[in-house]
Image 1: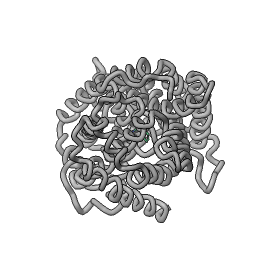
Image 2: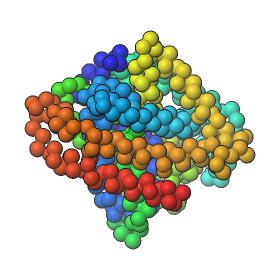
Image 3: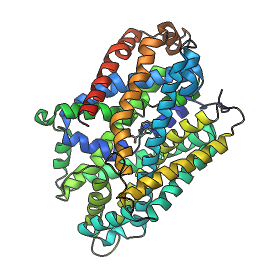
Image 4: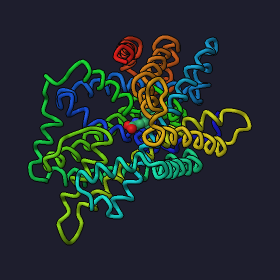
Length: 454
Ligand code: TRP
């Protein structure tokens, strides 16, 4: 049993899980791939995957976590004591979390640096080619990105040291509502800019000709990443969910909130980008080069710098979203550490964070000074990126859902979902069918295609 009591309430559990789910994936990845693969057409596919596969995986993880009251490594053998080998699936998930976290913190450090650059007025003085150079010089420099990575790691550890209730839950309950308010402010500003409707068209107008096979696979990958499922983080959070919570309802809330926030992020970004006549791009290019140009265009030549205010709001929002996601990844690892006898939570948190900073630091340096060092033909940053974006998550998710569909006794799953028979679970057959056949097949397809396409 982990030494913490778990979340104090259903609301706290939902906010913590939404905090994990809402992150860089929602704000800098979703809007772009949605537009790229056919807007409304992509959205339909994405919603199907989110609710039929992503949410099934989330319920799967909650069932495993709450029933075993443990992290994945111990959970599988507790639920099937005759199949001890499943603990390696748990370890595999934890290793994947570690790799994701290393890269995630590098990018989170960038967002934090941009809060400072926005607030100090540095960004406001640069035109679009200046912003390009600024980003390149910053991300390739040896010291500054690592300092911000370390600061971000420190913030994450500080929350974890507060404990599950007074750290993770409290911070999520505080930050998620603020995030929604900031996002709404940005949305209103974006849609009221001249020519905003082109951005809304890009995001929402269905264009089935752009919806390729690749787009469909991207939709599934994005659904898993965005909901934080497949790696065991939600198993750990599941072990903190109160015993009398309805796991179906909780999962629906989290999934709906995550999806709405991703859509709002799109509305906050693309109308403004199109209004300024800029090209939609994805990832770092969008967030660190294109958006500052948009904000700068709001600044009048003299007087109050409106754009600067919006720019600070945006980067603060991004940093908060990244922080609550990073917390969940580190919390999963720390919870695993504290399952060993005589290992203190605080010591696990600090040691793990140091390891993450070292790997993250090396990833960061591989963009700049260490760019000559290649592993398997890739720089370290690209290698970890490829592993955590293409290969490991679908495999880990496949094994997790296979455990529920094929290994754990159906009666136990039903017992857990129904809170020992006190709730009606009329949906059980549909859930079991999705977990046993649909989700594993879809994940297998993603995995095989990922491997074939390299
Ligand atoms: N869901 C987060 C995002 O959208 C990232 C994340 C947090 C995550 N925890 C995770 C992804 C666990 C996979 C597994 O940015």
